[in-house]
Length: 390
Ligand code: XIL
Image 1 (cartoon, rainbow, N blue to C red):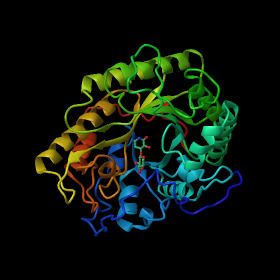
Image 2: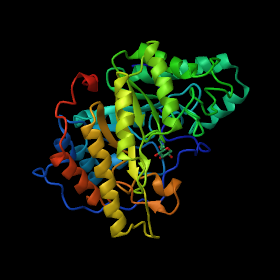
Image 3: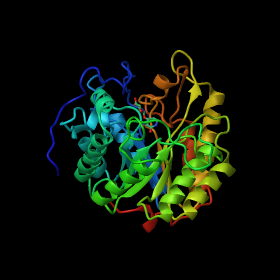
Image 4: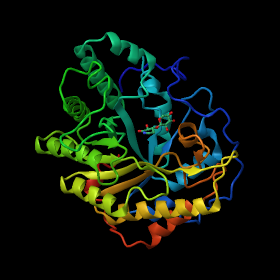
């Protein structure tokens, strides 16, 4: 364990990550009894069933892990957990010389107490960086940035070496307007503003090499959105990953975020083909952040018809993952509508997750359960490909 400085919450002014002020108070929900089959039980031997989760990283939100309905549902239904924000720079690295591992440690301890794997998210991202880092980058040389990123990856990964089995090493680096010829990257303080002094995808490669040096057993992922169906952005990611594999850069997987709505993206055929192409390179795919946003009324409620369409969408995507070898994990971005990021980032939308704000299973939950218990599937997907058992 590296030395750490514990700081609760984040400094005022660092508000790039926000949580809602008025979270619904959880009422005891229809109990999910010990006898009920849960998602994690139904998914066993097929894939890992995950959710993003939150601890006490925001001083203005009381710790969801202390909410019995949140904690019980998370532990009962999921066997993989990803800190939604606790490992991002503003929380884990709130000042240049300070690290705050307390919220991530709490999530790790929760996962370990309940036999869940921990998926790390993320080490290098163009956005949601703390003000001190944005300011630092304005005056820094590429070598300063190189040293800073190396130290961050080393410090954070060292703490969780042997604990976090898979990491999103680099998040959302590819441009939304990528042509699909080569790999067009988006502007970022790690790439070109000022960057770490390496051209092209070199900064991404370097991040993977640093990560691998710290935990050679961890599965290292590139994670992005808009790559779930065929198209130029997927081609750009594919080109980068293919190049990395051909040159022995340590990468084990690609994360498909899957922030979608029920209107048909991604097509099942496109998603299947994309997974197959990544797997053909010797890598695996995780669905990392699925939610299916719906239009909601002023109370946050969606129509019954939309909830059915949402259920079908969860069923469709989960079916593709189950039936396509190498899609080894299926994770939603939180599990209860009480904690979803969607209403804050997509005004007028919400109700995106399988449990409602009172932890009641929605039609989407039932559809996932039906899929897991009835869809033809590979039963031995949790083989060595799934990664180390920690
Ligand atoms: C989101 C969180 O859910 C929010 O709480 C936070 O304010 C911003 O980030 N893609 C990602 C995630 O990779 O890290 C983002 O999470 C959602 C989009």
